[in-house]
Length: 299
Ligand code: KIV
View 1 (cartoon, rainbow, N blue to C red):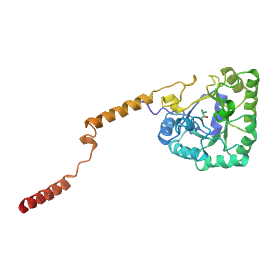
View 2 (cartoon, rainbow, N blue to C red; view 1 turned 30 degrees about the vertical axis):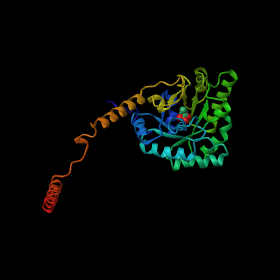
View 3 (cartoon, rainbow, N blue to C red; view 1 turned 120 degrees about the vertical axis):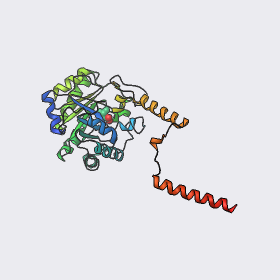
View 4 (tube, rainbow, N blue to C red; view 1 turned 30 degrees about the horizontal axis):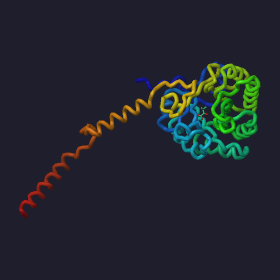
């Protein structure tokens, strides 16, 4: 079993992520939300690990990312931090944590950095967020942008749909990307936009684009780990998801096998329980024998 497949042994940093674009290196990015998954994802050589607010959907069972709180993000980021050594650790700023002004945004981002141990934060939105990004960067907080389908805007968008479908919308995405780059973002997630638009955006900026449902022209790719492993309960599977494993089936098989063993008495076996040390067993036996003899004498 190959489970340690590190491509680049050195620690991934924000400047290193920026530099990959010039070299044409494709970064591998994934989400993680807990310690064991973070360890596995990191030890497999993933370059960027995102504690996405998608945890609202895949871990907490919400329909959208809207209810996810800053406390929840901090808690999950702390768990992931303990499992990550090499990858760059990025945490999502949840809905509401940067919408009330730059000071609140700095406060929320600092919690993710200081309490959660993230090395950068991600927030959603285009030009309208440029000022906030500028302020975060001025406070030494690296920022990853996120444009295209921005799930925190689900109520405004009316659903999770392909974005940038018109020439006008495409031009707006390019302008948004340029504005985020000018504000100091070190990379930009492009979610669910036509591949041609992703190509235009990727060519228009000097920082890496990280695609999810945005085609092959992006500098990097990201997927939600639950989608990749087949443990997502999303009612529909978006066309961009490639499921690399069926862990739901593997987990169900394992649980069924355990249940069967318990029911027929095959678990636990002798090797899976603890014997009493011989001297204690002998002492106990002697006591039991003595008590038995006394009982007989009484009768
Ligand atoms: O929340 C998340 O997991 C994300 C990725 C899908 C990019 O934003």
